Amino acid sequence: MRTRTLGTTGPTVSALGLGCMGMSALYEGADDTESIATIHAALDAGVSLLDTGDFYAMGLNELLIRDALRARPGSRDQAAISVKFGGLWDAGGGWGGYDGRPAAVKNFLAYSLNRLGTDHIDIYRIARVDPDVPIEETVGAIAEEVQAGRVRHIGLSEVGADTLRRAASVAPIADLQIEYSLFSRGIEAEILPTARELGIGVTAYGVLSRGLLSGHWTKDRLSGANDFRSSIPRFGGDNLDRNLALVEALRTVAEDKGVTTAQAAIAWVLSRGEDIVPLVGARTRERLAESLGALEVTLEAADLAAIKDAVPADAVAGNRYDAGEMAHLDSER
Ligand SMILES: NC(=O)c1ccc[n+]([C@@H]2O[C@H](COP(=O)([O-])OP(=O)(O)OC[C@H]3O[C@@H](n4cnc5c(N)ncnc54)[C@H](OP(=O)(O)O)[C@@H]3O)[C@@H](O)[C@H]2O)c1
Image (cartoon, rainbow, N blue to C red; front, side, top):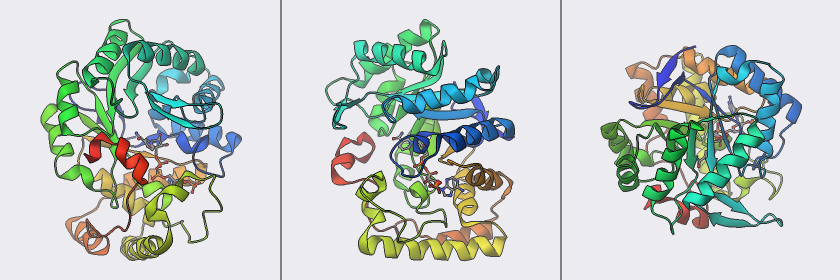
């Protein structure tokens, strides 16, 4: 397995990480047995970064990871676990914003350690900046947990350049987790250069634009409102038609190269720099195997030019979140 190091202070992990969110939350059609088999297959292949959030299915995603690791005695140290926290739910399934107060950080961490059945989390980060709490306070609280040995590294999620600088002034930051793909290029102008200047790595999520860019998406795929993607503007109406046309153009380039559309999309993110680790949201062993195949793909200059023609930087139709979610994104200010 190829490896990459997250920033100047972060861990060395496999060049592809496994994002476990869709195994429990937000996307329809998950199956626990297959999800656990997928985590095991990832570990067998040398994947050493598992990403979750404590609010993914209100803790169930962490319990799934715990069960997968328990079923393989000794496997806890095979993979770094990255946990996002801060999201608040109510019992009716309503979303209550984010809590980044130091006391809340410590509470969230205690629950996550308990659910995961581990004594430390490898990378810990707030999912979205709490607008009522300075990032310095949130990061400072995680830094205390690093001192206590319960957290190994501090990460950030969906923050902009100013917040990156403020957070990095408090404690070393291993990585910024943020959406980055052929369809989501927003980090290129300012955020990625700032992360590089500060020695902060990037774990890129949505590298397949949540499945839209995978080559497996179809117009009739979303069956109802239970799938979070129903709320994403690029998955609906005319936007979807235009975006699927871009995917077909990418498919042509991929087929010429002898790879799948998903592999081309993942390989493109891998080609953006050694400091970037794509997190793939595979939920089945079949999808995992396909995405791992991207590690074998080398995109030459001619391939990159063909991809650029097929999917120009600003070609995607529709935002990556709905207006309410976009407003929470420090990275979009
Ligand atoms: N920090 C943040 O704000 C944030 C936000 C969202 C996610 N994340 C993290 O990033 C991870 C990845 O995000 P994501 O799941 O949205 O990303 P993604 O990899 O772009 O999309 C995953 C979707 O694509 C489908 N897919 C089709 N072909 C695939 C292939 N070859 N390999 C993998 N998936 C394929 C998946 O499975 P099916 O075909 O089976 O449906 C799933 O529906 C999440 O699990 C989570 O840990 C972080």
